[in-house]
Length: 159
Length: 109
Image (cartoon, each protein chain N blue to C red):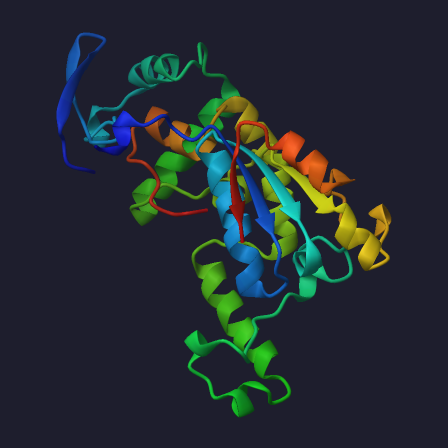
């Protein structure tokens, strides 16, 4: 069977649970891509994924240079001061070339494109955060139950 | 320009179209054809803002060989993201490219 035989995806709920650069971007690219294809989208940030929507932290998302075998960098070198900042800088330069915006600009674009953005209530309580700590694009802080309600009819993607 | 896989008749002219349903030849396009392509996408009348986006896309395509990303559109076309989605519902980059007689944009953003 080819793709044409299946019903196209109409709605997605994307969960971002990790706070590293490589943890945050896939979810953002998928959310933006969904809207570009006319697919309804909700973005839900939980645990360390919330770094991408916390106003004071979202401009400082870094690549993890330790514990990541695909970086092909020995752990001792990856742990040197400034190594993560350097790797992040290099990656950001490459991303800019292919028009991937910085996190803040990307979230604005995604929100303007009609994607709803939510923070996870359990994580917000655990980290003692308030709605004010988030960037303006965060629509609401919601429980897991509300997340499932909003995801009615959607494919759920966990990143 | 992309490979023609089919033909379709618009305003009495037989035009080659590619696998995505977009015009295969840049030179087949004109403003009357654009208006017909827009109707197929559910846009009854192309207003000034639509034209601003369409003309910008054709310019970028001529300069770079690819239709602009939604980010480039937002930053450079003079029409912001919200308005782009209002003008071309359900996928501005893809729809505007089709109406502009260009192939589907290749980028992910």
